[in-house]
Length: 181
Image 1 (cartoon, helix red, strand yellow):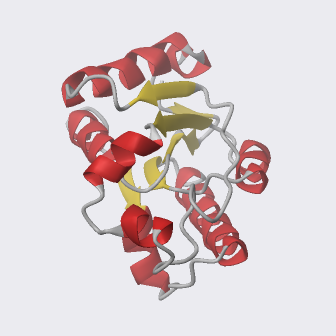
Image 2: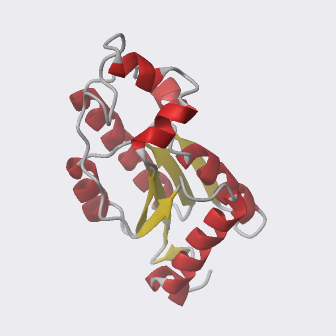
């Protein structure tokens, strides 16, 4: 179910900062690690560190997301299954991924802005709303809500395991669930 035509599945979790995409992505990775030996977790912040890419205006975010997608393609083409967590909430990225990534599954981790403001550990939203911080997606950078394959509403319940199981069940219910390793 995870590899088709020699390409591994790319599970692309996107959402606003603080939405819980990294927490869910890491839990998904841990859940699959024993089952899938060729699994890679690619976190947005860690990828930025790897590239030394620290510009956050919209165009820079798009450029970094395209590099992330190309790297996921590189890994997937070698038969690896890739779990990606990233903001990347722009139509250019959704379209690019659907064209470029052979086995692609988009998961949108949706979280209301009011909840994001409550969770604001880094002071990102409070700083952006007060004008101290710029280039925050969802505040002063508009985003395109995805037409994702799977939507996780991450303001409704706190059960991480339920969210991971929903993703796994939805994967099994898609074309990816029709094949096996």
